[in-house]
Image (cartoon, rainbow, N blue to C red; front, side, top):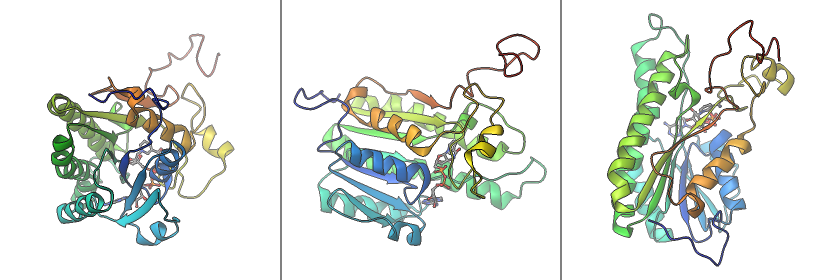
Length: 268
Ligand SMILES: NC(=O)c1ccc[n+]([C@@H]2O[C@H](COP(=O)([O-])OP(=O)(O)OC[C@H]3O[C@@H](n4cnc5c(N)ncnc54)[C@H](O)[C@@H]3O)[C@@H](O)[C@H]2O)c1
C-alpha cells in the first residue's frame, strides 16, 4: 500500500494525478477545487457538458476533457491522453451521475436504462479502463460516488436508489480484488447537497433546509463539505481505508426517529 511521506502532510495530494468525472459543476467541480487546494499535481475534469467545462480556467494543475462515462471508447481516449500528458493516473473519482424521478409503474424503460448506463456502467467502465495502469504502478485510489440512496429505499426514486446500491456492490468487490494490488477502492455517500441535481430551481438555503427537517442536521450540505471527504480518502492519510463507505449525509442514514419519543425533531 501507499507509504506516507514524512516530508508533507499526509492529507496532501502533491505529486498525484487525478481524473474526476462529472466535474463540470456541482460536487465534481468542488472535488476538483478541493484537490487543487490540496496541492494535486494535476486534475482532469471530465464531463459530458462541453459548455460548462469551457468555463473552467485550465492551467498547470487543472484541465478539462469531454467524456460520456457510458462510452468505453471515450474512456480509452481519456486514459491514453492523461497518461501521455502526465505520465500516470493515481486517483480516479467516478462521480458523474444522473437522477430520475418516478414510481416503479410510471418509470419508462429508457429512463431506467439511462440511469443505469451513467451511474453503474459509467463507474464500471471507469474502473475497468484505469485499473490496468494502476496495477502496473502497484498503487492507486478509486472513489465512487454513491449516495444516501445507496442505503435507503425511497418512494419515487427507486431506479436511482438501485443504481447507487449497485455502486456499493461494485466498489466493495473492486476493493476485494484490487487491494491485493495496492489499489484502494472506496465509496462516498452524500445526503442532500445543494447542486443543480437536487436544487434545479436554485431555491435559497432556508427553503431547501426546511425540506430536511426529518434529518438530524436539519439542513442541506454545500458541495465543498462533501468534496473534502474525497480529499481525505484520496490522500495517503487514508492509506488503510479500502472498501469503506463514507457517509457525508448529516446523519440522514443513521436511523429513523420514533415519533413521540424525546430526541426527535418534534421534541428535541
Ligand atoms: N446533490 C445531491 O444531493 C447528491 C446526493 C447524493 C449523491 N449525489 C451524487 O453525486 C454525484 C454528483 O452529483 P451533483 O449533485 O454534483 O449533480 P450535478 O447534476 O450538478 O452534477 C452531475 C454531473 O455529472 C455529469 N454527467 C451526467 N451524465 C454524464 C455522463 N454520461 N458522462 C459524463 N458526465 C455526466 C453532469 O453533466 C454533471 O456535470 C452524482 O453521482 C450524484 O448521484 C448527489
